Length: 242
Image (tube, rainbow, N blue to C red; front, side, top):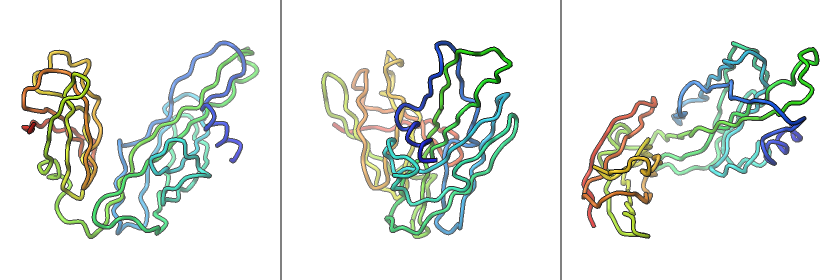
């Protein structure tokens, strides 16, 4: 397992030849993990939609994508940490909080890593030269203390926005006074002519702030899509100050 983690950390790929094709076959059920502090564990389902078995390694990190299973600073244990999923089958991972001290006045954010490694082509297939990729997927883990006040569904209503200029663009700072993180699928200035250049989204952290550098005219209104606990998006608009 140490050897596996080191090789994944280096490049997340293994080369054995000169020609091949690769694609992700393993999919996580859901776009995020919400971990209520009162729960003993939370389960995460992973499916192999490919036509061959996959070796899966799972671990949590603290936000540094260079952390491996061995160097992780996240307060979670995942069982099983290493497994094989046959084609068309699934695997349930158990995510358990280890009791480490974390803030109790807001949600904390960590990341779940799922790495899939395809099996080596059968010698009978004649694939003497091939390129083999290990594909990593990361989704957020929201650790939610039981002491939090308010409602995660209404956290977006507490956001405030302020604009400044930076490098000829509008730098829009979002401040979140709630105890819940607000994830966004898209953030842009209302009426932006070139939607190809708008930000891909992000997150305004609980009791914190985040700045988005946006293209478009300074219209006084920001449009954004808020992602809820289930991965659904709701479009919102808000005025901002200067």
